[in-house]
Image 1 (cartoon, rainbow, N blue to C red):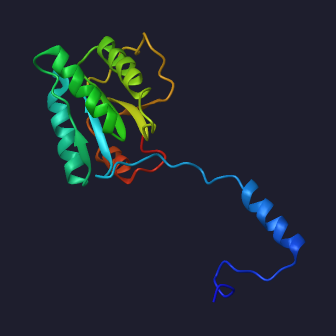
Image 2 (image 1 turned 90 degrees about the vertical axis):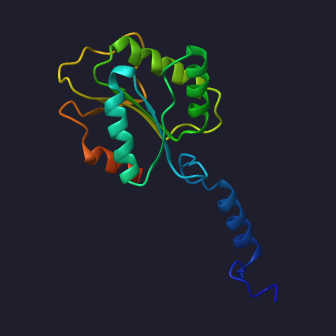
Image 3 (image 1 turned 45 degrees about the vertical axis):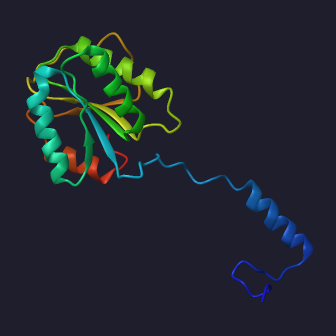
Length: 173
């Protein structure tokens, strides 16, 4: 019985040694981003001035069957920071809305997210800034945007962007 399994091969000792070495030296498959056990969870970061767009985005994600997290930004700043840090610990992707808010808010969120994300074991699947109306935007200064995708929705939230996020493809974020 032990000599009839799918992993059993009949070969000489040299061929067997080569197969062992080849197996050990074979590069591992490319790592895939860790997904939460509850499904893909998208963290939505939005300033109070963009809360209506955040609500619309959450509704679109609901319609696409995605889980989303939207920490409460109102009220006590310490509580809001804890809420954001808890969300950053469990989310799979981060979307920051850049609509009516200013660039300082966006840069501060990126900096805060990077600090919290450095404590995680698994990296995010992606981080992106969704540029919303108005169409004319100031450049985000004060932090590097390396690793942060920019999704142009300056003419309004695009359902195609939501579909891309929900499929989790490489161009999703």
